[in-house]
Length: 295
Image 1 (tube, helix red, strand yellow):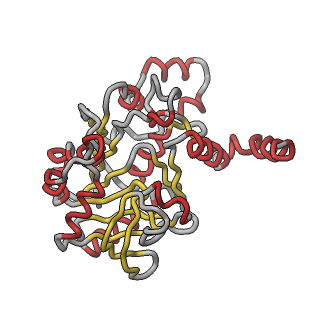
Image 2 (tube, rainbow, N blue to C red; image 1 turned 90 degrees about the vertical axis):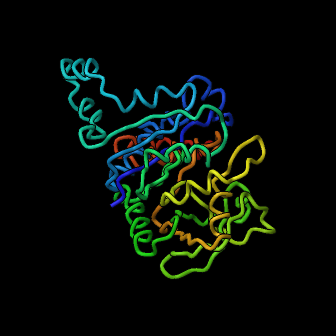
């Protein structure tokens, strides 16, 4: 079982301004829960015990959210809001350890992952982007399948994939590879945000990875690109060129990635995840049906 996970969450969320001017984008709600809570719940359900957040300036709210506010808890209990009090027990804090470190400058995803070297030690670990939710039933089931593939093939890395529309490939890192079976791919190349004309496939990296510590020397050797950032896809690509194995696992048809990176994708994520909450959806569905008639 993979016990450790790293959540890069240092980005400022400029595409979501002004909503992210004074709060982390990872704390934007999707339904009743902030985005980052979904991510952590996925990891904990998969058996993760230690989670390292790579944060940046103005991200203190992430740390506060996973702390215990006993004053608030007592106030809820004393006022008879027992159901709400129980909802605050979204993580068994006695079974999960949270760690936080800062990425001083916005130097890219690869550099953020590189900061986890001492935390990881000699273990394989998950990387889960803090602004991406992956819905599966039961929660975190896809991570267990990702770990099973990683343990079976023993690659340097195993990457979660999602098939996207051809016109959207230029928004993602796209893989080239050969399919084994049941959505498992031996990755032979990666292209970051290709145009539809040159994209080798429609399989996009969707914000979840497993790496061995072999990723760290590759990150250290990765050259800075546009804006002085080190891209994780460049680190992976170099390892593939050096003959190291990488595998990909495609999401099943019943699973879906939710990206909150821009206003439209965030709004869609908010609506769809709210509809998955029985308490909200019973009133939201009739409202949306009525709204559609008026548009």
